[in-house]
Image (cartoon, rainbow, N blue to C red; front, side):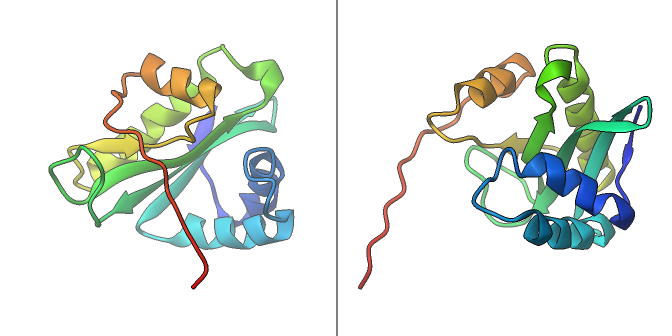
Length: 144
């Protein structure tokens, strides 16, 4: 069962998200997710099995330029996670479909995402659910 997350779900989502974004704290993520669940420009969908949250997908509207797109706003998959023991059963695809549906309702005609160059699991997932690779970049910074 998949439904849109509410502020009360933020801590549970953060407990999963820390697996993807370990440079954060669960508390930081929970605060951010709580804000996102009430924002008009974002949505988080959770997947439950027997009342246990086993995955989530976070999507937002992006009004800035999104690589490879021609419209604005663009629906954007910011993150998607399914617990390892539930992978390859279609749950991530269902979560993505909810994000795409939400983006269409918000007036989007395009949907985009990204992943790290080294994240082969995410790369294969994106290709398997219909995304096409648009570009590869390496970002640089330096202290001045």
